[in-house]
Image 1: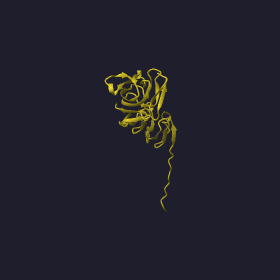
Image 2: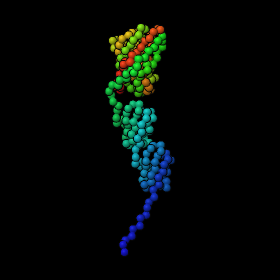
Image 3: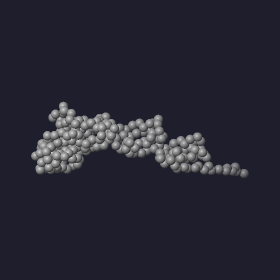
Image 4: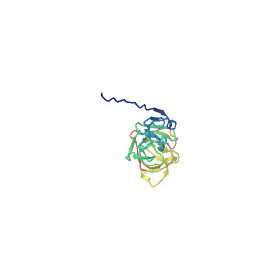
Length: 230
């Protein structure tokens, strides 16, 4: 008579809830739990929930999940800083830094003001800045005007933006209050920007010094180049 084998299947339970609401009693080894708030799958080992997957996400640096809530190896890509971070020993560690190369912003079309001495945002020459960072930037403006121009910028709170034309770069004028005296021609500026606790945009602004009923134009092909150095 041949041996007979009886197979007794083991039923495993699968739970889905926030991590704090996953049960800790009435469980069998191998039961599964999905933590909806952490997006991590766990296996009950008889004493605790052990992670068997890691978290992977992307978003602004300020929205990064709490590292101590996630298993080692979890990943997060910061859209505002370009950094990719990984959880190691309960803390986020940067594993990929953004490129440190220069970035160029090119003015796409001519832009004109007429009879206005109020600084207005340039349509194209703007770029995002991260908190607690340092940037060097150059701006080349192609100008056609019968009225002399002034330029300025808006920056996040707690940001210092200093610089001037390259022809007189020993000055450290406050860019946010405006630099002035630019007629038709090519004007090149160099600036040093240090941000504080706030991220946002460096936004170039410009206007006529004295409101004059004639066109003042920043030409297509003007450029802004920036480099994040720290």
